Image (cartoon, rainbow over all chains, first blue to last red; front, side, top):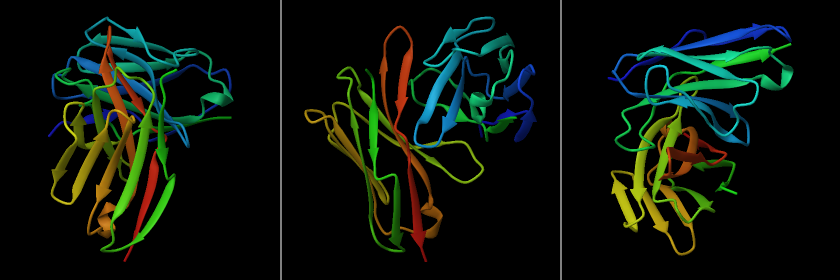
Length: 113
Length: 113
């Protein structure tokens, strides 16, 4: 079974803090994704990566950056957290054989106060 | 712009009844239409998909239909069971310079025993 793990289930940070969200997958997938999930808005793509050290902006990249130093690990970075970044963050991985066949982690509920 | 609408936002049915969730999409380039189920505390999981050259697809108690002319697609769950209770997301997907997946806002389905 594909396993995607995220470093924290719940996280509380203060405005202005630098926040790291870590994601690890164990299926040797090339593709990895970061989404945020908000009520009534579904999932929105923040960043994605098709290869090590490669990154591409998704639909809402502002205020975020990412890092992929190893194939199995994809990190989302909030350089200076703001209250409007309070959300559920979901990581996913996929082989790329079909664009939507993505395997999701359980999510990190981030609260910025 | 690219958009996927989904209705209803919440749905309650009695165990054994059918549930129907409807989606519309805006981008004519869409040619894959996946559906995801998100159980409480978990990430979304792909449950079924339909491609643009197919009008209907069935997998046990789940069926999806697609009307490309009208840009509508639907999820039908028959003989609902309490374990069907979850949030369901439809999505539209297509290949551009990267794999694009646009999610609907989600439907919270409750199956009442």
